[in-house]
Image (cartoon, rainbow, N blue to C red; front, side, top):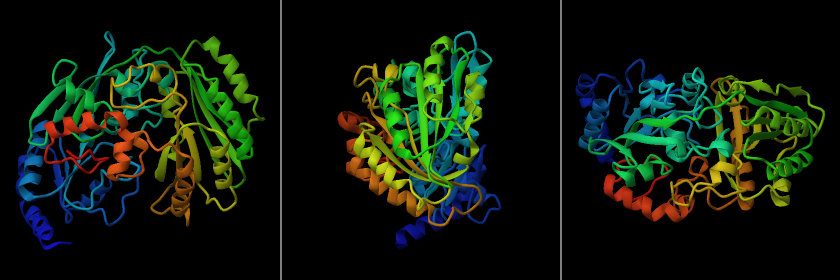
Length: 456
């Protein structure tokens, strides 16, 4: 470590006590008993022993955030912001500097009469889903109830309701932000409109987002659940390709293939339209192959979300990207990866098919790029306990390298598994220059750079 950086860290540790006294929240330094748990957080992305921030702050207010930013800038320390801790590269868990963990900013309020929700950026998706359920509404979020609202929303947000209701950012009415120099801003369509545009898909580049205002659509009970098959990957992937091509707006699916202890696949479906219209799609899904497990039924959206299989979201190491299609080249590549050399608890997911309402939003309305027919993939090693199965993370790297040649160059930013300048530029595509102008206006010194960074 350079001498100047060592000096900055030493100075920060000495002055952290003073920072603590100014906060209504909590600050931890490495010698504190609670530091290890605070450093790790509650996300699924594993944090290595080399990820040791100088100070971990759990703010309880915007004033806490402003004081922490002032402390970091005065001390010459980098700042990282963590909402849920599910980032594919673990960018929100820094190896030094100051970690702002927003998990205490988790309050959720839903007005049942208007369907307007206010939620802290550290709230988990499942908490908002549960809060909305009693009024017959549902937030337009992702598929994992443990993901923090900050990360999924700032990246765009694609999930179970994308075909019928669009992206998460299409439902955002306002965003609360603390800028790099401690100024509180509420951005919406009338106030700070360029910042409001950038925050709906441009990532965590522009400030510390503390909360969101969402419009929640009304949602009747859905037809949803999982069907598991014993099958070789090739036939299943061809079936999935045909199913996706015929998907009506009301249908969203997530699929997975694996090899241990034998080749198998599952398909989770969510039908968010009229219940009678689900029958044809359910029969088609069940008809692919005799299921070994089938729990598809009519249920509330909250019931469905909260029964997400925990085995896939305890701790996981993953890499992902975007596919222009699920054609022969992709099918052949994925089939080659699913074999007996594939470690236990390693899985390839295919999800977030872009169609319906998601793709009917005018180009440029938000920085989220939506291309009809595209879908996302991830190669995942998941495990319980402190250590993965031997060879699992190596397999993820090999799988990602094998899929990259047949993947789309531009990738949905929440699945972007590289953080170099060119990858970020390509991911944001035609919106990059406009995002960069907003970055120059609100964070010219690039204080918020531990992310998929847009350099000012």
